[in-house]
Amino acid sequence: MSSVEIRNLRKSFGTLEVLRGIDLTVDAGQVVCVIGPSGSGKSTLLRCVNLLEQPTSGQVFVDGVELTDPDVDIDAARRRLGMVFQQFNLFPHLTVLRNVTIAQQRVLGRGRAEAERIAREDLERVGLADKAGAYPGQLSGGQQQRVAIARALAMNPSLMLFDEPTSALDPELVGDVLTVMRKLAEDGMTMLVVTHEMAFAREVADRVVFMDQGVIVEEGPPGQVIGSPRQERTQTFLRRVL
Ligand code: ADP
Ligand code: MG
Image (cartoon, rainbow, N blue to C red; front, side, top):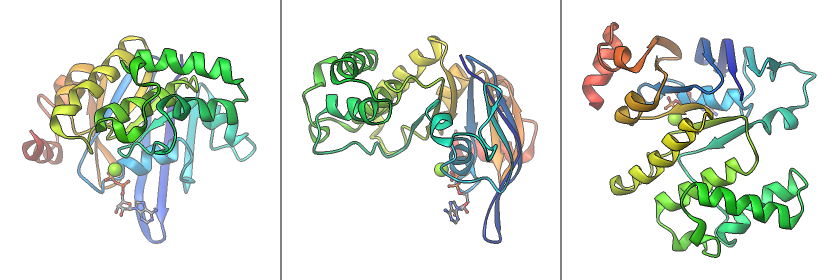
């Protein structure tokens, strides 16, 4: 099991300072949910954690290994992290099974039989064992997102990052994806989750972080941050989304 530590993380795009000194820790086996208005820097934070964006300054540690160390093997470091986006980005011309095996074979060098065995286990885990032979276009959005989760799990990440995984889904499809995420949390996966699903955050998160304008305004147990927020900005945000 894995932990994440973010220290004084800053990120600017030109003159726009999007992250203005973020300090955040996710302990091994914990779930931290990040909430906040659109444009507050939530996606940029996740993208800096897995180095899809280069932080302007600050440090990111996973299991005590500094990912932001210029001498670190970025590809090896990034392999510890699974990422699930709002858009599922499956290959439409490949079967579900192949979508889940391709990176295992190409990136991890697993043989086909092993990759397929692992893919079938992870498809089982997300409740889609029977869809291995289907193509993404034959699946609902919720099923496609669960394939994307299986694809990430198949790489054996020690930590999962989710960026609004249910925001692109029709409301009736959200529940199945959240159920899979809840199960992952119960299995002890370390998770950093950007979400607008307040009920999920309340129930599953060990801690909730409210971000606005590139800073963490408030953080704590969900009952506190969502249930009785102390900061005016948090209260205003929650009034709009709840
Ligand atoms: P959130 O996920 O909370 O909605 P983002 O992290 O996506 O916020 O964006 C925060 C701010 O950074 C926004 O003003 C956005 O326009 C800006 N931004 C994000 N990515 C880039 C980029 N690659 N280049 C320039 N500006 C960006
Ligand atoms: Mg975002």
